[in-house]
Picture (cartoon, one colour):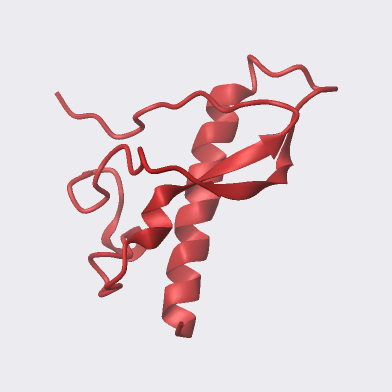
Length: 94
């Protein structure tokens, strides 16, 4: 795995955590949910959208558009300790 793959994965993961964190904050009880402690879990129902078709993801943040050949990383989701994140489709254009 090259350093560009790591930077791309880190950027995507950070963006996903931020989006889900913002969506979850109003629902979470501060004492029960730790968004920053948890683990990545495999989920065969992912990805919920194609990052290459989402107009809100800039080219710099699209691993597939930047040459990453494997897509296994798109099948993982973040599972925080003490709560469940609601599955949302964050990229929808009518």
